[in-house]
Image (tube, rainbow, N blue to C red; front, side, top):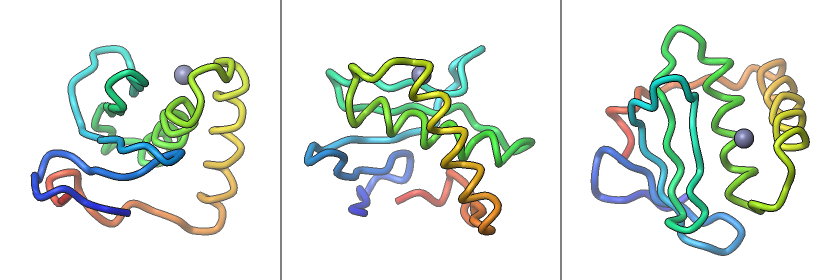
Length: 99
Ligand SMILES: [Zn+2]
């Protein structure tokens, strides 16, 4: 995954397109995906890393295809996060370390 030189966002390719991911304060949202800007934003969630994992997957799915329905994205993200979590995948970096 390509990384930007800026420390506050991650640049990567998704579905063949350039995307960025950064942490932001989104009030009640865990995350969102602006498919026009190719930008994913996540709310910090240090208290619940399992939820943060699911949110990353959820927004990546939205980034892959904005036409996928919310219920399908939600269910798929939950299922993928469950498998990854049970396999032991955990966040080892704080968002401040993204570069
Ligand atoms: Zn969604």
